[in-house]
Length: 122
Image (cartoon, rainbow, N blue to C red; front, top):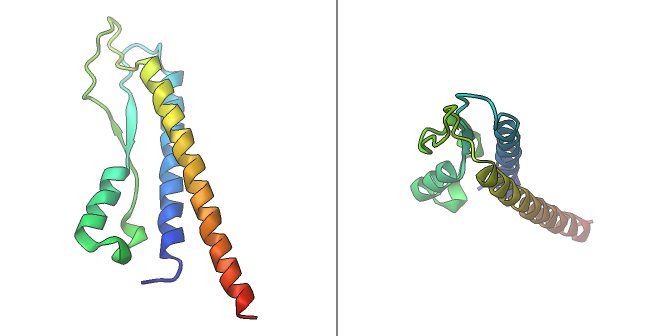
C-alpha cells in the first residue's frame, strides 16, 4: 500500500465533486433551454466497485475517473422537452457542497497526521 494512497483517493473524490458541481451549475444554467437533458457525474458507484473488487487497501487511484453522462432516467414532464428540475438541482448542489466540505476536512486531517509524523522523526 502506497503511503499517500488515502490522500490520492481523496484527491480523486475532490476532483469528482468539483466536476459534479460544475455539471450541476450547467444544468441550472440550462433550466429553461428547450430540449436540454440534464447531466450527472458517476463516481461513487465506480469507487464502490473498485473497493468491492480490490479492497480498501489496494485501490489504484488512477483507475478512479469520474464520468459525465446524460441523465435520461428522469422523464421530461415539461412541454419544452427539458428534464431539468430546478428544485432537484438545488438539492443536489447542497449535497455536493457538503461532500466537498467533508472531503477537505478529511484531507487536511490526513495531511496533519503526516506532518506530525514527520516532526517526530526530526
